[in-house]
Image 1: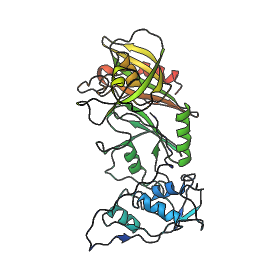
Image 2: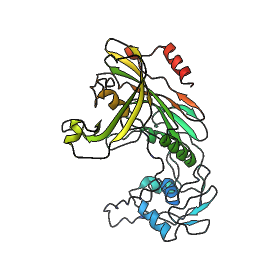
Image 3: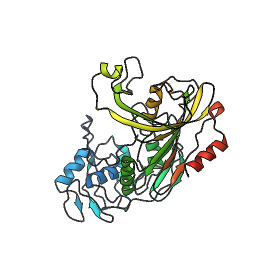
Image 4: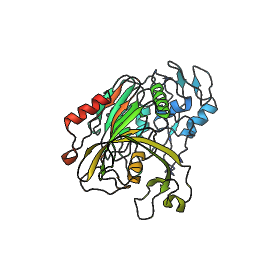
Length: 372
């Protein structure tokens, strides 16, 4: 469920310039004032800092080359691409050639910005500006100087992809345009899962959250309506060894399915990675004739973990199109209810309506039990 937030060690990707008209020569960005490292940006590696600041206006390969050839200076001296920056340091960059097709970046480098958009390469990152009216809505559950918690709706991706251009990450970037450090998601939720998502507003907080998620320092509690009547009434521990598997032809294109390691499907498919242990604790809360409300406490963070472990026991999450079956007009009924950090607990009731709506008394009891 969680991603590693520190992308320092990924190599920058070079973007080939499109064949342009020979009459149109590339624009050259003017020499900027020094980029001053803000407190929120401190701790980043030099290449990562410039990549974030340039927002795609300059290819990563050009940034890397400029650093290695000494064209980029930190407090007047040469540094390696992976040099860690401190707050207050000044980073000078050379003029960069910018493709005429990159009008957004050309405007930014010339000091012109469109509404809701920040300039690139300014000496000091500005404060958060008023978002443009075209920005899509995003519900903020909690916010302080370093952290923002978002209420993600079902159907919205955490990160954009080729088939899903809209995302929580992009809405955050638009909402916080001009901030010293654009909020970065510290973990993920599946597209069809609703609930709490955390994003960091500084690089130090991003690393802290990443370490907490990796070490089990964030307690994660979910609610799920599942098909059928769950046997038993007490909490039980579910343990499975799960492996990623390509979906069979004719199923959802481009998607992956997680199966129990050693199952028939896994044996027939080529090995795609080592199986991982998945553990969670589940407790039935409410029973209906053909459905059960489950409280799920995640002990590991595997892809699709809750959906897989429940479906392996014959009780898939209601309206899960991959591991169960889609119910027309009903979103997938899996919700990230509570995230407990060392300093606070965040609680978000599910947005379910109709026969799956939860009584206020049950929600209040859950809130008290989780001490949120």
